[in-house]
Image 1 (cartoon, helix red, strand yellow):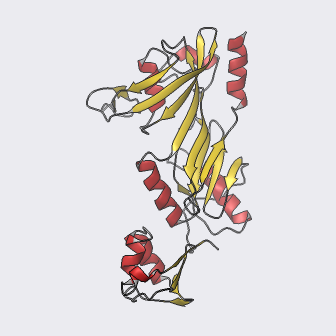
Image 2 (cartoon, one colour):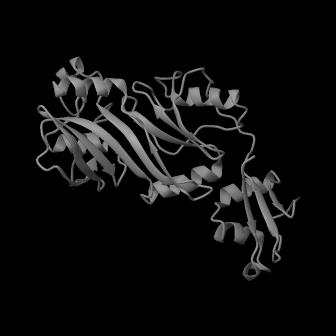
Image 3 (tube, one colour):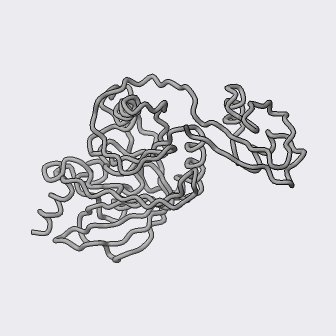
Length: 299
């Protein structure tokens, strides 16, 4: 069972528990309301109403587990689990896999696989995505197991407190070995198109980069995202004249013969555990298709 627990200090004596949960524990009104209705908020082992007046040393326990369902069919699909605890699971998504069902992709998604895994391991969870990746981008994705963990990590994401690192193989040699790309990204209103462009009408977007390895007419580049716009790395690198190998949307059509998808991998995540607040540093090895591409380029 996943819980939050807190002992009330003297300074909060006489306050209503609803105020304490919001101000001291940082819980959302929605979470408080749902947990209270389900009698999952206990003081000294007894469910209480939200107008309960606190006393010093009251022991507050919030049970974060609740019965939930999701309209997604569980499917037995192998997943590469990099980290898991009672609050979150982090997986290394392979290429050519959609994260969540869409009209076009109803099955075979990461969410289908996760629901099967949760069912098999007797975990009463739904899929709460904290981060996402394009179908053709491989790498690390964070999934929260309960409402509290999702709220905490989503707030961290908005505050740029989650360190997201990628590796990309680009055409040509970057002019500088490291630097920052600070260019706004905009989505033109073109029906049916997902393509973004660098345009002053767009949102400010910042990518820090560093060349890790210089190859024959190519670079292996590490990218650290300060903002998280759709297609940000792909748009930014292409805007410098160095599109990612295999990226036919922002690069070269003929790349598909060498690399069937963009050579972009979310290899690193640094963030604090939503429950313990301890720093997690997670890494995912490059997938085989990018390793093979690098071997070809080294020759």
